[in-house]
Image (cartoon, rainbow, N blue to C red; front, side, top):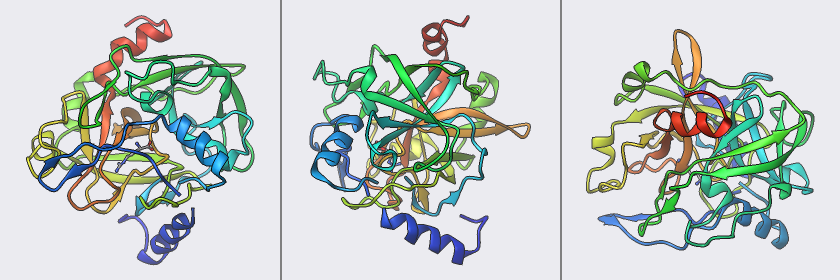
Length: 306
Ligand code: ARG
C-alpha cells in the first residue's frame, strides 16, 4: 500500500504470511472458466480444519493494521466454543443494531446442498476488538437468513452471496449502506475502496489467518474489464464488482467482510468480500457483492422500512 513505507509493509506481509488459508473457490483457467471443487461453506471448512489440527488463514499482499476502534462495525464470525484465533471463519459488517451482513458462502455450501448450513447456535460473533485473541465481546446468534436466490453456478461462482445474522444481547454500531446516488461514482474503474479482514495473507494452503484486523485500499476494476475473456469471461454480474489487481487483495477468511467507500469523508458499505481466483493475482481481481443492489432485501429482512 502506498500509505506505508515498503519496509513496514514487507514486515506486515511476512508476519501475516505466518498465519493460513484453504477454500475451494471458483478457479478459472487461463482461457476462460474451468470447474473447480464443490463450494463448501467457510464454516464447514473451519470446522474441518480445527478437527485436522491445521492453522487457519485475510489479506494477501499489502495490508495495514486497522487502528484500535477504527472499524466499530467490523465483526469476526467464529465457530462456537473454539479458541478465537482458531475459530474465525469469515468477516461481517454490522448493518443494523442487531444484524450482521456476511457472505452466504460463509454459512452454506452450494445452495443445492440444502441443510449444510450450521445451526445458529454453533456460531459466535466477535465485536469490539481488532485482535482475535483478546478483548471485545462474544455475541450469540439466534437466527440467520441466507438470500433466497443464493446459488453457486457451474463455474463455482457464488451469486447473490449474502446472508444476515441476528445477534442477541448487544446494540451494535451499523455501517450505513452507500446512498444510491453515490454508487456509480464509487464503482468507476480506478475508484478506491477500503477492505477489512482477518483473513490470510497468502493463498497457499497452510497460510494462517491474521490475529490483527488488517485493511487495504484496492482500486475498482470496471466490470467490462473484469469480464474480458482472459479474465472472468462474463461471469461477473451487475450485482457484483471487481477490485484489487496484483497488489493488495482480500484472501481466504476475508469473505463476508466489508468493502467500504468514502463519501464526504464518511465511510459507507459498498461491498461484501465474496470470491476471486487466487489472491493478489496479476490477472484476477477480487470480486465483491454490490451491496446497494440488495438494499431492499436487507431492509425488509431486518424489519426496517425500505
Ligand atoms: N471466498 C474467500 C473467503 O471465504 C474470499 C476470497 C476473496 N478472494 C480474493 N482474491 N479477493 O474468505
